[in-house]
Length: 201
Image (cartoon, rainbow, N blue to C red; front, side):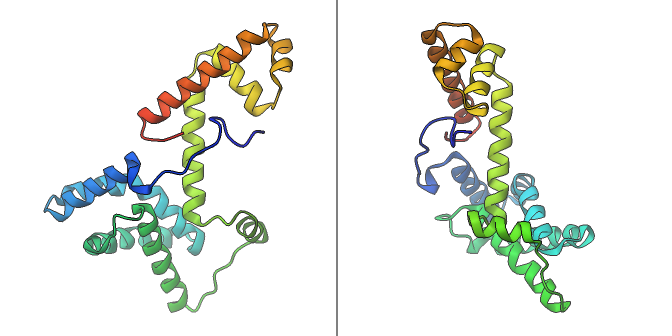
């Protein structure tokens, strides 16, 4: 499978993303006295906190309690948040530190299976990065599934089955020019959809 569906992905400044800007606006609203606005951050990052907490604690009851405490602590420490960094990174750091405190206080050792160790050692993923990657994968899949069938087909053949243009032309019984044009249009449609939902392909 090819590494990217939209070509070479370019790095952009963190504060240039729609999500980052949105989070900064919400944080400013909360700090200005709009306490209800914090619920928007909870809704956005609840899955992240649960994902990170579960990575360390591996106990559903403890994870639920930890998530509540993490959001309570992050709310109280919101004035210490540095908008130069992703809010998700700051929040996952609070989650990690709190979970490690729980493990230390209970005299427990964090248990990580061999597959997880190999995964982290090979790809260098943190729990936050794994969560972000999974969220982006699901969003991309949703965008692909929403394409008309003829465009969805070329995306599947090229990016999932890894077929060449010539092989796609033969499989679809279409001229090579039509296959290339259809794939180009599918990519543009995906890019438009992802940008509209706040993501940069």
